[in-house]
Image (cartoon, rainbow, N blue to C red; front, side, top):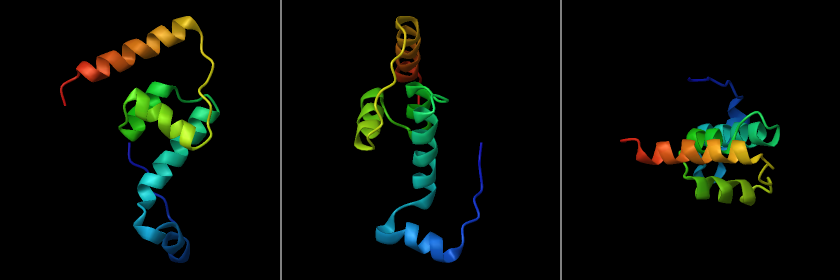
Length: 90
């Protein structure tokens, strides 16, 4: 799904200081907030950001977002999703 954001030019300039990609920053912010609210799973965050499980955990840690406590069944389901994603042809 594509989402279009309309941001005033002066705000966009401030957000892109140092050459940062505003679109990427927006996706990362959505992923972080979704995970904080437990709307998104670790796997969904990794899919949004194109990260491996380890990269996703590192990303969350860099933003002081603790890993959610999940049940053993949910952990098994997440592990299976990551495993299937790794095996998927790119």
